[in-house]
Length: 275
Image 1: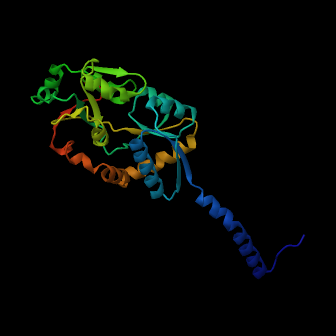
Image 2: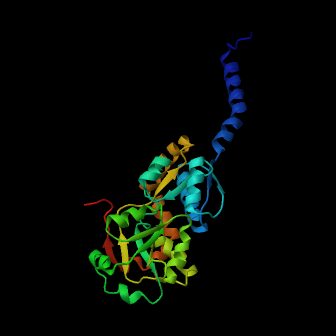
Image 3: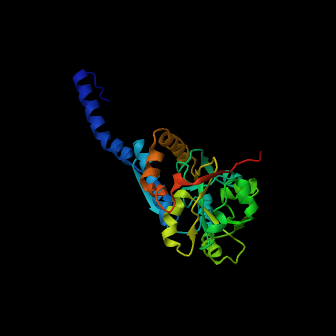
């Protein structure tokens, strides 16, 4: 066996070896983070933009596959099975058991500023409301998806709520009809911005915003703990460095315009745990 003992020869050999390995290193460095997700076009766009910006902020390229629009309940089943990688959801004990969570607020507190869809013509019933006690006395029932995190918050605050299984979007028509035992549909400020132009059978309540101290978080499939570790680090940095705030402000600037007018509403504060 020939052993290199001449320093110039040894340096040349090391240089040639490094040049041969460089394409391999570059290929590994360019390997993107691959994510499979789904949801409504609006929710998918927000998730995809937020995760792409956050991962780019830490030097990662991203490749995202969209499985399309389907109910949240179906998306949760797919995430539990590992067919999708991540979802932004309200935190519940049941979800914490099924999925890996990233304890970072994902909407810059827009989702926990809740504004109501109500039937057309019902605004005068809400005009006198100033306090939570006033609203409780109104004896109106909220409609929500059975698995929504804020269903628990409504119940904690003694607010009547009806949870429905399956696709929560049936609630639009249920509220509009006024005949299904559901009086209003609370939506996050950024959600109602996107939805009210398509839901002209409903009215946006003009004066109130229900606020609680719990943003939606990121859940990750339990089948990919390595991805959870990565996103846990990346999203905490995105929160600290203002990436989440910037994306929310960019995509949802209309929360401060009619008919949402977020900063001009009477705040009704809800607690997230029994007092």
